[in-house]
Image (cartoon, rainbow, N blue to C red; front, side, top):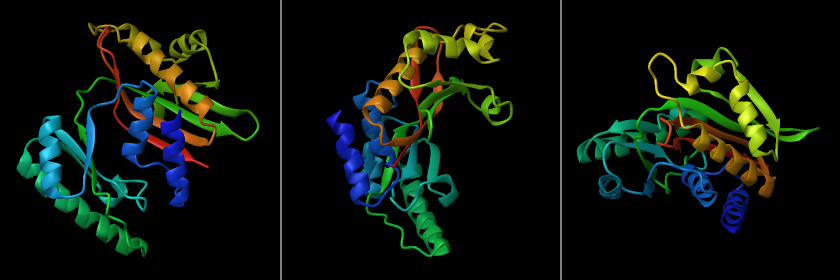
Length: 238
C-alpha cells in the first residue's frame, strides 16, 4: 500500500530503522487491523484537547526518532483520567526524555511531542509478531502474552505468506489454546477476529518486505463477537 511505502521512505530518509508509533498505527489502520483511537500532540494544551476528544482514560507516549524503547526513557504515562493528569504527564515525559538524552550523550528530538491513545479495556493478552530468518524469510509468531510468552515460550510460527487454515492451526497449536475456548466460567474469545488480524499482518509483510521485525504486543482479545485490539505496535525496517 502506498501509505506504508511513504512512511518507510520517510523513516529511511531520517536514518531510522524503525517507524514511530503513530506511523505504525497508520500502517495498521491502512491494512484493516483494529486499533484504539489515537492522535498526536506537540504541546500540553494540544495534548489536553486531543485527549478529551478521544475520551478518558488515555495513554501518553514520547514520539521521538531518538527513543525506541519508550519505557526506558520514562516516556510512557498510562491511565490518565483528566485534563490535569494529561498536562502533568506531558511535562514529565518531555523532562524525562531530556534527561534520557543527557545520559545517552544525545540531544533528543522532542519536536514531535507525544502519541495519545485510548486506554483500552483489558482482554486476553496475545502476541502476534514477525521475525525474519536470513535463510527462510519472514515468519509470523503467535502465542498468548504475559507469562506464556516470557517464561513458558508457548508460541508457534509459520512462514509468510500463509492461509486461513494455517492461522487456525497456529491458534490451536499453542499449549494454552484451551484458554481461548473459554475455561472456568470464562466466555470463549473472538478467535475469528484474531485470525483476521493474523492474515492482515501476513499481507502487510508480504507487500512490505523491508519490514525486518514486527510486534503487535499486547493485543487484547475479547469475548466472542466483541473483537480484538492491537494496543501497542512496533515495526522495525531494514
